[in-house]
Image (cartoon, rainbow, N blue to C red; front, top):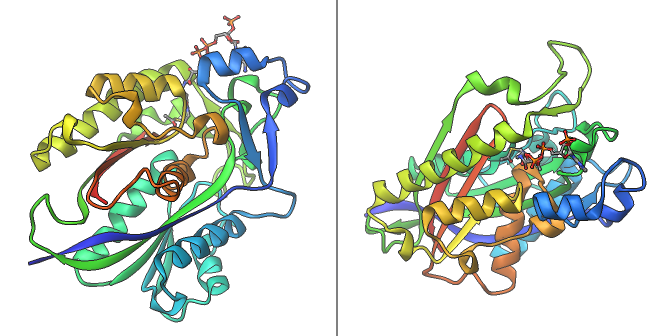
Length: 324
Ligand code: ACO
């Protein structure tokens, strides 16, 4: 018998305000046609003035707890993935901990930009498998609209705001791939690629928040290779072949990256959960938002094999294999 982290519930939150490509084309030199053709994005959600990352995270976290039928007092840890915290410190997770009514336990943030949710899931899974927690709330929440240069058409069209969350619960498994829960995780980083995707500010460098900078073409090339490689690594390590996978839930950066990665893995597009057209890239929130959507509409069903994969600034990248 071993301990597995089983997904007991999912939740999501998107800010009310929708910003379409057409609207953006009124403020920067771009077109709906260019954005759709190069990225697949049609719209994104933007947090209201005064609406913070913790507010988004709280809504998603509450929805996940309700879906799991779990009370806040039962949570042992909150692991919140974000690159856009409310403040330099304390961790946004502690704000959520207080607001959600969690008593005791621990709450902290994980920073791995767009790979943040896969990192956070890996961290929470390790806590559960070591017996240090029985119930974990894992959240990805971002307000990327606050770190974009809205006059830079090469980046501002790509991102949006949102939050998604899952509840993990410890359950006994046999130690085989037939178990429900997280079967494998793999995370990587390589700091030599810092300059290809970063924010030019921070408390210890400029003292200001800064704006997102990206060498899009270079990021694109690395993304397809790294994502396919890390999924292969997780599948091979678990003795699972790509055709056994029921659903691929990728980080939603760009439809062309999603398609190229799925093609390299030999996973047909019908098995890929896609939200990038409506959410754009919400960084650490994109995978849990996609999970919540596919769970909510009945696509993700108990017993299915689900693969998550993400890549982001750092570079960071990773993948998880889950039996739903
Ligand atoms: N509207 C109109 N034209 C634009 C826009 C825009 N919004 N942005 C750039 N262009 C122009 C460029 O100026 C360029 O013009 P030029 O040929 O006159 O110089 C032309 O379009 C082509 O630009 P490229 O950068 O070569 O376009 P590309 O096909 O590479 O697409 C894109 C750019 C969409 C950013 C792509 O490289 C990409 O998606 N990269 C991945 C980046 C990403 O998703 N990062 C997210 C974080 S990391 C991750 O999540 C994986």
